[in-house]
Length: 458
Ligand code: PLP
Image (cartoon, rainbow, N blue to C red):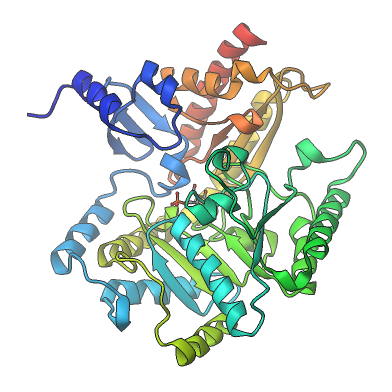
């Protein structure tokens, strides 16, 4: 017999170290236990039916409970439950998936490396940056520049890349060789009277100054999310990536596009790089590659990098990197079924269309709201900026924890939205299957929750 929900919460509190959870507050509130999901809806063990307007952690793009994926998973597990991909071993699903992904990946990627998540995908690319530069005789070129406010994972190396101080503090991070340049957050950091384009040029000049300070011969790569996710849903200001890429090109610095959130339709295109004309040398994707049904990531490299890796094998033997679950046949089959759904259901076009509707609704609804200073995002990715006083750009007292207060109220009202406390914002990334009528439900519940909370704190 399964334990009663009440017991489950106690066992949970007594036994689990939850990721990204405040250990003290959690001890008071306990867990919320999700027990089932269908489409955009979840049910918890307290009997709440919830709209998941975040798609889990920005990943369940095709919605919950898709039988096509469950069937593919079942078949794959029955055919070949596991086999490794080391020493040239392979399996049919990963081969089919690789061919399909290389056909849609931006900027002519040549090879794909499979792993289990965004962190190990980015970790792998960091190692390839180092390996590549060692092999081409530039061993000094090993520093990697990331941006404040970015999110690239939580492994030792990728938490270092992540530009959110809470991921560094008391973890002895960032590691040596990871540098951070200023964030593209025009709303927060644009100077009075400065245009977006001028701000972008300033950011590019600051990047160049950082490179020159450390010496261009020591900088190997620059990594960026097309739209920053966890750091605030920060869309790049006008001209930003064009200006940044002038600098990375000038100093022969590899560009890594972290498409872990943006990839596979989130912005209304297959990849975020398409929206902002990013020409990456390497790309990481994960999350929506399998819509979260299986932990799986795909990182891409260009032919130029592949050529050098081949030289490495001539020199050292094997490319000595990889994971037990790399190219897992079940994960690859799930990814194939997931891509089938994205294509057959026209979810890229739907994401663009419904995403535009979502932004229009949020903008209209909050246009005259004294506590909403900005609605930002792209496609089915949005954030609402809360502010004590938008005219004077006065932020709420951090002690109020305004964004978590709003999302707790949303939950009580049947909606999961994501608080981004570092920027006093509430984020949305609903499954791409969300209809316009469901967007109306999301916006209605959110609006009522904001009004409720502002009555107490505004
Ligand atoms: N990169 C980005 C942009 C992310 O948003 C995330 C996770 O949210 C990661 C990397 C890390 O992925 P994972 O949690 O699968 O390791």
